[in-house]
Length: 330
Image 1: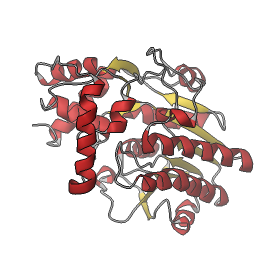
Image 2: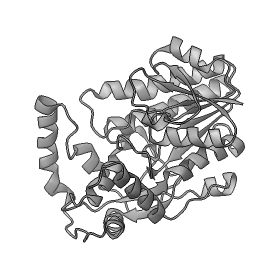
Image 3: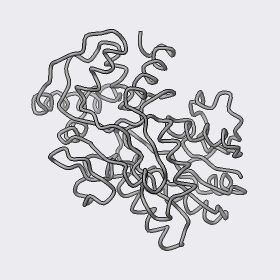
């Protein structure tokens, strides 16, 4: 069994690739030339250089593969050129799924995100069926992932593809080399560099549980169905308290109103766009997203796939240990 994995140099993708290797799959990974490949170190994988917007490179990568795990995505809360994110996540997903279909790939798992799902204003955990529309999407990332999942659904229906959709919540754990936006929160909290926080909440899942969920979806998932791969719902205050306990620091207790930080986010984005070109410390989209707690339940994945999630503390502990070992945290 040969599996093609996109995004395997990244956080979730590398966890999926490692688990496939453990299960005896041959693994071919699609990666752009010059990508940081530290997450592939020591892994017996075949490298296929290409780009999601280069269809010919995708045709070559998919040739001879039995399965596709399309995990790659442009995940940023701010981008100087948002259209690039939309092109990668929407058109790139279309390109790789069609390339795999034409190459004769038998079964696929497409990695979406809980970012495309509704958030309930009272903090009640949402599920796969909670009503949501494109108008509910805040920012380029959520918009792009919503449109990408819609595009994949359309292709599945039109071409009658055997493709399962998974929606990871907030993966946390080792090998977050970039790190992701959530990983940066963990690093800042563990380093004592988070003097205050906003009132929000996340569904925290261990990255290795999310990877396991991908393989369970491949083994047991129904074509065209979506499955939330989640974990434990925690407020940001609770997350900060857990991290502080792991590193022996006192947690910050200062909660700031969203509207108080919003002007600073506007100024930070202005500076990033006009001067630094670097991602700002706070973004307008990120703050607007944080107004609702991003709580979810993964009952469907547990029931149909046998998916299980370990306590969030274990995910945070493994993340902190890895960040400390790799010098992200003093």
